[in-house]
Length: 316
Image (cartoon, rainbow, N blue to C red; front, side):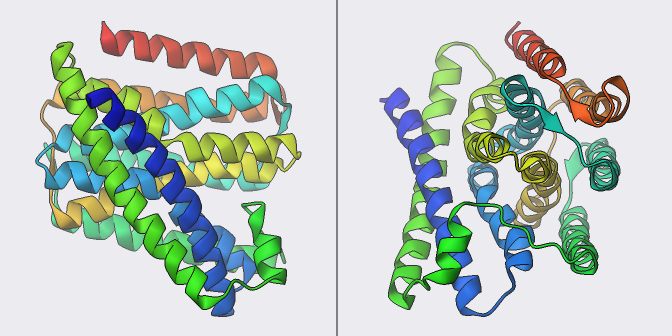
């Protein structure tokens, strides 16, 4: 029964995320929000909604290790698994200027996250700080992109939604359906994953850093592979960096506001946090120095291998 709950939860999270993206974009178009704002805010929020719902559900159920492990595990999986797999199959040129800025921002927020958790808890006010930083980050990105006159299209359906406005009743139905799917998907995933972990003697931390984090990162994997296939490298790499930033600021921020997130074991935080920082920091030399302006297939293979080592160490 637990395995059915896990599979059903993952499918509902994937379905809910897709419905939320489509309906949110359609709503933004109806409200005459620019495509740029849609790409930077609405879509990034919708694609990371599974992580947010799972972490909030876990916190409310008194499972802080899952809430925290989901974010750290997703950030590791986004770089090691998703970026590694994408680079392995597709050449990934790196837009150096935008990459440098986003990498510095992601690295800074990652260090801030570990620092805030070092005292054993992510408090209400630290959650507020994260949300304020998220709002400021989005404002700066939107303002900078407008100056560069760039229009972002992060999903295939945006053009269709713009040219063929979705009726209001359909937008409302999809929004409600997406929210319900995410809500129950998060609940089913946690209700199934925790007993499975306990039956095998695996801690909640390990199951959240592996199975749950990979499951909630499926939308990012699909988006990155599709973008790379269409040679939209800005979107593919930007999706991963942006998702990691959103996971730290929004997922942990909103979760801590609802319920402070305690750290069960500081030593495990340092272990997982070090791996997360390591994957983040290694991106810069890979993208800029080793093969200038490109993440190669060989580097993608290295990322995948490193991710496999991390997962192996988790279970050992």
